[in-house]
Length: 241
Image (cartoon, rainbow, N blue to C red; front, side):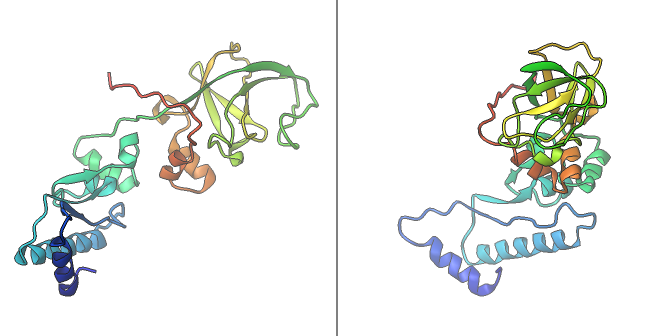
């Protein structure tokens, strides 16, 4: 807690032999809210505490408090560093940080896309089921594509019959239950073949399912939708061209 007692304790700790103290920070818990009362109060407490430490002879090279929400929507407390997390993906912590940035004439650039290639493409006859259980019943002959992604990769089983992909710029529904290593799409009448690329997570402006869409379906936050993606997914990093 930012008290006089804790300030004196920090000064004592900073004087320990073999210890080089470079920075100090606080982490905002409510900077993504519509009203910034609590966030501003927290920021002022931190600034007052820094002043107490300075009066005791202790200053820091790095002072920081700006997570993504604070960096996007609080102008007065940038200090020395910003700790962008969700914003690095081009995503907003809330609609309020998005509104704040829009008023400044800026926008975040979407930076994450999840793709897979169709590994199998077959016509399933009417009356047949797709996947485990009775998750999808074909009322008519249905062209079904298999994608090598499943809940083992972070594509929640709950997304079956609710999510969609983007194939040649057109929406294709994810049908049936999502398996551990595979999921299924209804290709419909789209001209497609094995090896074609399907976007399962991308920029909503293109019609792709975004992290916000996933969060609404699953009842989670968009940050959780991104961190669900597991390590076994290969990552390809490309510079901004």
